[in-house]
Length: 142
Image (cartoon, rainbow, N blue to C red; front, side):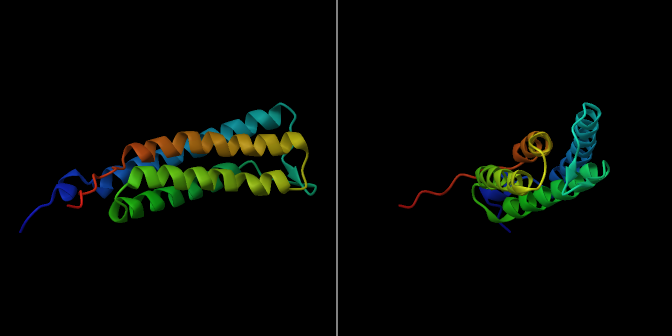
């Protein structure tokens, strides 16, 4: 059996998964804290007159952080430039995550607060996962 350079340099799934679950938990706590502070400062999280429950923030953050982990895991196995592809993909997804916030029937302060929560979560999760992804060298075509 032969071992290629890509197999030697490829990160294993276990450290990525451990880091992913850990940072998902940290991000969930952080977004809960940000939402609680924002709410305590007097910003409502009402959309169409219905309040967003405070516990929705960590639940959704944890869930979508795991989606990011799944994307990172797939890219680790399939993409030659996993880190670069992951960073580009998550950047686009972050910007797209602003659309519902900015187009919702909510006050301007609520919209800003919701975007802030997305940015906090991404600022925590994306770098941790990206650090564990490799951009494997591409072989030169002769």
